Length: 107
Image (cartoon, rainbow, N blue to C red; front, top):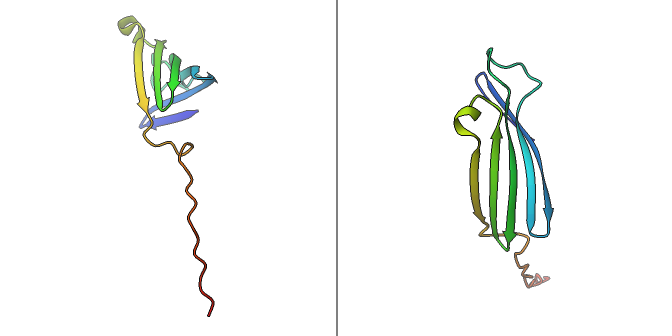
């Protein structure tokens, strides 16, 4: 869940992912249906994003399609997005080196 606002504009996102081995799918809703719109004719329902992707080692490749509900639908027909994510450092895979402990001298 994510909520953003700037002056009179509000936006909320809520969604989920499902991961099976190296594949994932998800869906997100963008909008605030329970809040009053900031002016007449403005819709608080914006879009639904459908997401799918593949994870290989530290590389993630994803695709998403936004199905818009706003007046932008007539112009855009939705939007496509391809994402590449490479994780340079993964703390889960980091090797744990045991430091040799030198005991303190007792005086």
